[in-house]
Length: 374
Image (cartoon, rainbow, N blue to C red; front, side):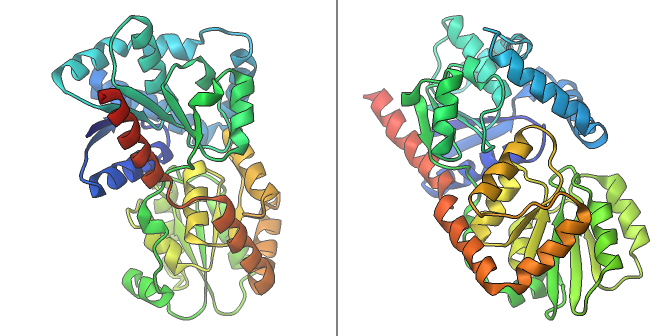
């Protein structure tokens, strides 16, 4: 089986989900090709879309939140959105690519290629099996105007919402958000810390802002420093945010208990090395942390789908989410000191969040492509 995975450079979560399925497919002996589909129109197009998205989220999150709410309202009344028409222009590029290759299925952990696929279907272009993967714990605007063969959702609670929005129930499959198998594997904390050259003794607070380095990283670090308790140290991951990385690296260069990290491909190891994680409620990072069995403190969300993610996690006891930075630091410490509460959170994470979503999606693709070939 040969599968095409189409992502887009608007945050790291979509790529992470795609790579997780790619990993699962390759472990089963299949071929998977993955790339940013906007690059088919030229790298400049891909870079421009990614930069506009990331800069809006980092510098004007309130604007992003307002656009999201407008999108939610528009999706209820518009048959075809501007998002559809813009991505329809990618149809000619994707058509040319598909004609030069031979794929059994197309997997899309992003709305944009799903919009393009929908346009192509309406033009009568024959396509292989098409499967969309939603990477948040809510249905973002405009999924309902797409026409994929199947939609993978994060949890069964999303099915009713998606149906109300217009997606046929028989197309909805609650298989979970796919994450790499590395996150569910057990590992010794001391070995992880040794590998990362972190202290073996003490409580390790892992602070993250997603791939974009958002989520009040500087304020959180400052608050921990102001209220530092004995035997605590911080690991701060800034992701692709080079500005914050350089600024914090300079500021804390003499502090031996604060470790500032930039972009990393070893997130699973950092999660295994920590005692608790502070992260904005992105769908992928939150799922990876839950699958890793780490107590989670959710920090300020990017308004929109991350607000819904936070709501879902708190509702099911998978995280806590105090509103202020001061409250996050204080209540996170309190959570860690309460063994019963941390164990209850880990138990809830194990019960609610499947760690084998990627494997389930790989099995789905095997099953459906086999039926199609018959």
